[in-house]
Length: 144
Image (cartoon, rainbow, N blue to C red; front, side, top):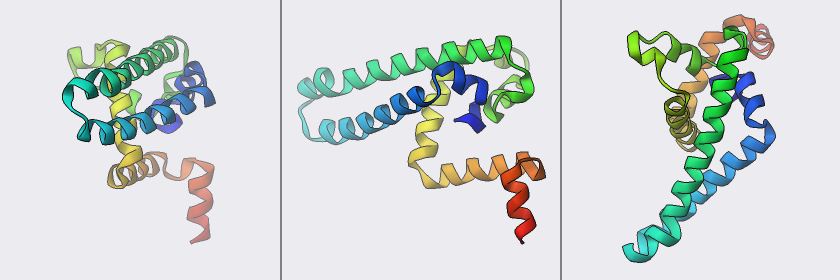
């Protein structure tokens, strides 16, 4: 989260409390998916899927507020690669509300955590972006 959105966003979202809420959300999605697959629709919607949708909206609002706060007050260089990349989009795409960015980020964070190929691709992009500037990357590079 810190690499993709930036330390100021993570701090504004509540650091470990946000990570904990996000991990709970991921667990609830997995649980809801399994239950909704076997329950009749009339039960799965109100008892399983709608509560998870409410949880996602709450998490998205929290992240949107953190993104807006970080974009207003943080040094752009401290923002994560996703936020910096979004700011370079042409025209109206670069001036989208933080709620849209948060909605996309929640989905991407979930996908990158649950899908190893997406997570690996994000890691590769981060390493290529950081180059030898990050201490961990520099230390690994010097051990070769």
